[in-house]
Image (cartoon, rainbow, N blue to C red):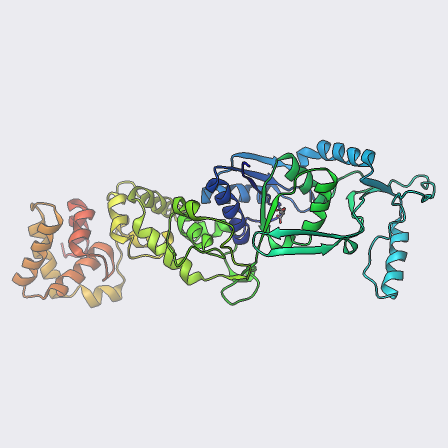
Length: 465
Ligand code: GLU
């Protein structure tokens, strides 16, 4: 059997963290088995679907690198196909027209509630052998109902939850096409899962109650029933259901906040799935390990600290070229141009193991690209007369020396000694002069990366003329 999985978001909001995990697991399962991963956009809720939400989903998937092999398929473009299948089901007798009016439905519900029964359709338009139906009322457009089996159970071995069973008596003859002919949600999902030959449906467990209806429909269509795996929900750091209250729930918000996609993916992979005690792994490794047997049925709790830790880890490993591009882009968003500055790739290397995210990285490298403006307070504290004398002597020696970190470090040390200063008494004022602040990575590296011209100009700016 060739594995075919799908991710089927409704474009009614952003790609949130739960959806991204569903997408990741569906993608990984297909990759693991050399199968096909399909993207399907469930946009039939016209009132709530927006082009912005669609774009946010596509952007989120792309940012995470979860490439689909087929699609995106749009349900709104498949209406003719749904109507065709409804026609086939009516012809086969697995679906039927129901002419019950809203008023009749309301009356039925009131009666059932008075009897303390669960409101459900009573099957009055369901054809049965030997049953005579009333003649259809004139001018009432009918809905189409599925002829759900009345006896027995519908059950499946859920890949996550184990065996799940529903009594058919619990499921009524639900509507598959509304009076205006539009197909309903469960029906579209079923036609798509069948037509797209989906073998494994991995989705959130908010869909568990849809599954028995979908299985019955598939069986009525004579279609194979895929395997289902319903993922438990994700709780916030505080153990409450994840919601907007928890801050970054949209995937692209993590991008804005400076997370690397590999950190988010690694984090999501461990959210409800495990491979022994492994915490840090690449997507290649994940795909080799991933299976549906090690997904926990209990809710997974979000842990921002762990995500942050993973982000720090991946920042250290990230390619300087990529970090440079990110820092450049983020500075440009603040109106800071880096042209004419030192080589960004060399600057980011000084900071990639000192920051928690890409925004912090951009902030950290910022002083390399603008003339520093130390505050009066910082000046008064660090640019004392003795310090300025030391900096003056240093400038003389930097005019013509070899420009290389080890050599530069030596020079700073010697100048300090000759000026009667301890190393920090010169190195800290030097940092203030070069970057406007008393802390920085190793001063030799800062000097080297900044380059002779900029160093001399920045020293000149603080030294008396
Ligand atoms: N469109 C559904 C949702 O966004 C998913 C349907 C499915 O996976 O079967 O929740």
